[in-house]
Length: 203
Length: 203
Image 1 (tube, chains in turn orange, green):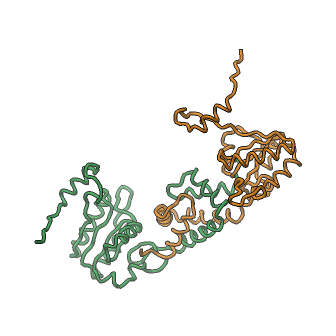
Image 2 (cartoon, each protein chain N blue to C red):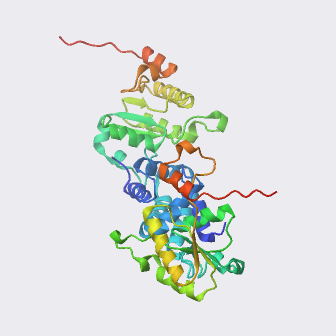
Image 3 (cartoon, each protein chain N blue to C red):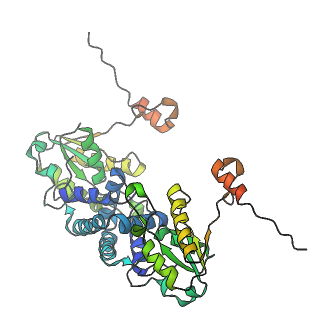
């Protein structure tokens, strides 16, 4: 294929983005060159800045270019005494969008996976243990993914909490709101029965 | 949403890529930060280089960082005496992949569209006219898109060719190979009847 070497390199580099195959990468490169060079230069600049300057919050390990992220730096967030454990920074975004939670977070950046050689210290549990014992925390909410590894990680952290005399809770598994019962898988449906709650009628 | 300002800017900048919405942009930013910072820095570098250095071939107007693209610089391509007119550089890539054509190209970077104020000189037809009269060209193959604007542009260029005493041909419209007749739209099907060709039987 007779294509300029620099353009070819750009198309290959664009494939490092998730979900971008050879066709999409080519479309992106041609689109930027033909219609939006200014946007391309701006993107290149921000990409470089972000990759170099964004590190991890020293408290919760989420992505931030400051020492502490906006949530950890917010004194109101400390008052609740709640700490929510998530696997990735994207989970924080999802939870924040619900507007339901006003405590702080701790990001594992992964989950326990002994087969891949990922142990407790690789997901920052040594740091979490120090926080559990030094800070005023009433409740640890385990919001790891409902996968086998996520459950194992949640159980491991629940054990740590019990040793530090802190209540650990797990987010509810059950039928998604707005879904239809017949389309829900069996495991989720049995979880929804096990986790059933009494309906209180106020008279 | 409590997200770091630099990260927020990166997510917004990623949306300049075609087909990337807010969710994909967020996934891309988190993916690069978490798993592939080296790839992100490399992409930023190549993006900047490409946006700054890639210009247009002085002969055919396709994208290249040299004065002439590899196709125009190839002396074997001149021998055929054929010139193929396409709307975008991506069309060249598609035609080159067929391996069917060995002449040169001319890229319009658009099509005639009087309502949008795009006239002949905006798509380089002044330059094409000079090439038609100064170079040894036997045939101009019009491979603009089979849209109303593409057809109008092809007709305009065919007129230019006739004035310069050069044969102009249009790529065939018809039923796509491997398709089923009943799923093909009516206009394409009538084109396939109008463009029917005699079957020669060699005995």
